[in-house]
Image 1 (cartoon, rainbow, N blue to C red):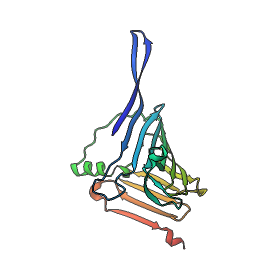
Image 2 (tube, helix red, strand yellow; image 1 turned 180 degrees about the horizontal axis):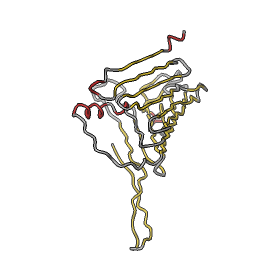
Image 3 (cartoon, rainbow, N blue to C red; image 1 turned 180 degrees about the vertical axis):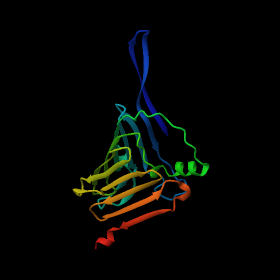
Image 4 (tube, rainbow, N blue to C red; image 1 turned 60 degrees about the vertical axis):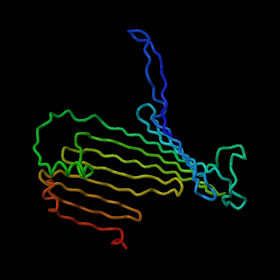
Length: 243
């Protein structure tokens, strides 16, 4: 069952009273099924998830899973319904994800006409992550994730935060950084630093993971043209080379 929730707000304007729609929930879904062929435990878990946006900058995603069946004193699932305990189900999982993204205004540059072959256009459309946008001087994205899990008697909670951003140092140089923190283990998550350099017909990519299990670095210099994508120089050092 898929739903959305809107509200109407009436305010006064020069033309009189005007109703404005306000989105409260962009999406709210509930799903459950019944297996008539099963000999026991016919009902599936009840899955719920929803999505909304606050102040046009904060994205919120939440979800929950309810088990309609009870568990015994040992934490083993038994064929006895939770609604006998006057509740729809037993909460076995819940999640919350928050994210926001900030970016500077695009540079006001006149658009120039470029000619590309069909193969080049198709390659760009399928490899967008390999291209760098210098029209945006900087952008910053922050994620927060919270997860609650209780399949039996014991409950576990994990939460982490991730931050990523990039900055155009000059018209030819761009740097991006991704890192995070695991609040459960009190450790810094995988951190990577990427540097991009526009070399006219060529381009350089430098990737560095400074610490952690995946410690590594790589340098790639390649031709921009997708037709000559195999023409490149590479230098790599992976995590097992540090041992």
